[in-house]
Image (cartoon, rainbow, N blue to C red; front, side):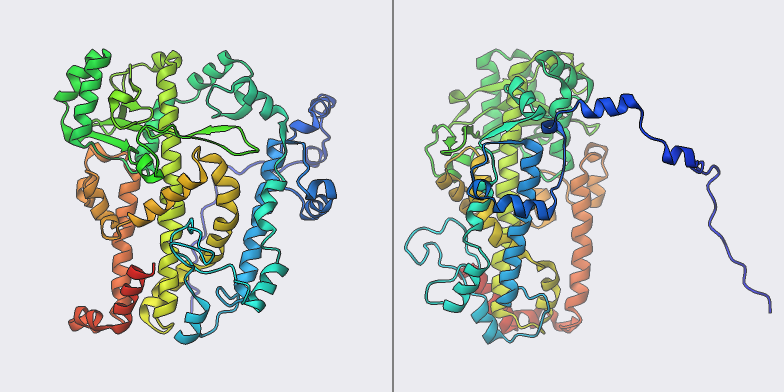
Length: 523
């Protein structure tokens, strides 16, 4: 019997040359060695730090107590990254011992799970002080929980609340620091490679990519919540263009199809921060410099060829545009030369404000709150109400790996030690914003098709195939994922519920009823 033919993979037409021994063993030239030795130790970049060295350094009395006077950006970044990984692992260990997130999973009945998964006091802590965070798992034991408190203390979780502060030096030195100081009024995009003068920095911006294209790309390629322009804002933009002498835009804006006008709107920031409509958004931590935030409003025009063009930016919206600074774009069309932008510092400043507002909204509002904290409430409610053998638990549980310990580390360390120093508002305003985003989250409106429609975009594959939306990769990807996930979940549920009476079975499922009630009342 003849052996079956085997199809071998095609070899590349040209294979790379095999290195010769001389090339492998070749020593660097003296010139290369001189260049390497001319770099100051403070300017040598590194991305990580040896765990043993980190242990010995942190244990030194002068360093372990936070007495670090001078350090480099790269060294501090490596130390912070290493330290925070350890903090996360500490919480993982604590949750493992308590069997909240066990390394070796086991079956736990509902009665036991209700003991393990308890809600933290909300809206006030056990001591009567307001809880800064939305409803979450009770993680810090009280004094009467002796066994848990001993584990908590043994793992050093109280100390983690101070660790990150201790390894941040008082003064940053090195090449990056010198570059930042020389360009303290400019963008830091590109790091020290841009040069040490303003001219070098401007040249760097012009030689790489237009900052304007970068801004527009960010609003179409990722998760930024760009939405259709409300009518009241359109009226304000037109009135402001007339009032401030932007004649082209005053005449052009009323003629543009409203369905092509979109906005990044953070007018709600001050309400969410629980401050007055005209308050300055500014904060200074005792060991930090002044930090500012802003509530920018960015107007875009989406052209038929798919180009998203920034039209105007309200740097910091204070009750109305009459009380705010609004800058219009001197470039009227995406095809206009970016040459004017190079020296248009008001417009470049306005774009910085837009990016600052967008960063705060995305990292604190969307990522921290709407992803991690909304998910935590769902996790706790599910553990307390849904048995492990129920199909809903089986579908959801794989997506929760280490989420609770990561969230606990963020609440106790990342937010109070790092995020709080970056956002430019007081801690009270920051926590108020987190609660605002949580309390105003709407599950149904955030279904991908509903979200796209609400924000003024097509919510079908056919609609997004239009040339106008060719650059909206996020919408296309998420809609595809949404449809795939729905099909998967449906097929999984129909393994548990009978197809012919599935809707009625779900409505009559006591676990599902109680689960919904738990999420709505406790979460």
